[in-house]
Length: 113
Length: 116
Image 1 (tube, rainbow over the protein chains, first blue to last red):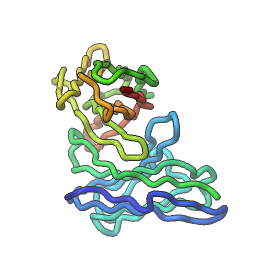
Image 2 (tube, each protein chain N blue to C red):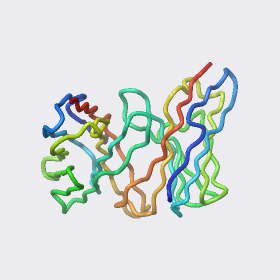
Image 3 (cartoon, rainbow over the protein chains, first blue to last red):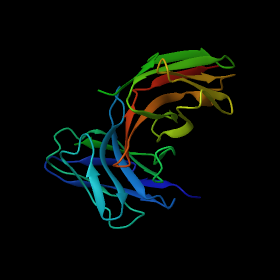
Image 4 (cartoon, chains in turn brown, yellow):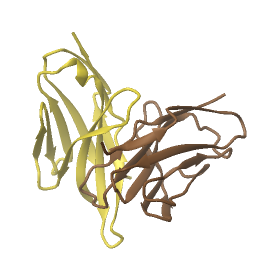
């Protein structure tokens, strides 16, 4: 079955540590996205990529970095510069048609030790 | 500033009853409106997506309506089931020509609890 796989499901970060969240899709979608979800708030866009080897900052990119070396993969690194990283992180993908929905993974919950 | 407001914030209904969730938006230029269902600890799943010319769309027991003039949408759930317990998120897309890009604005969601 086609879909988006995020791993790990739960992740813990120590102070000063960088951590990388994995996102893989086998839907053959060109576009991929990273969102952050906090309690009581709408999803906020961190980074997005519409094509391999290209990506753009979203609304809250500070303290995060991404790469898009393969069409299927869009990993997100939460750096030590992100001072409030505790959140639920969602990866999504879509075809490059703004009238088509995004498909989401099941998220990674990041917590600070 | 583009905004999407959903109401109510939370709702509790008895199994088998109907309910309606509301979404008001101030997004321009409007492209489409989406409803997603998000189970606790899972990613959102698309229910419907409506463009400017569509004023109603159904997906099983879910029926979404759109009034582009008043900038309002509703999601009606018929004969609710326990599995309908989830957060329902309204998302509005603004499309910008030339750059071929679009921007999504997410509502905070309505948390629905269906009890036996």
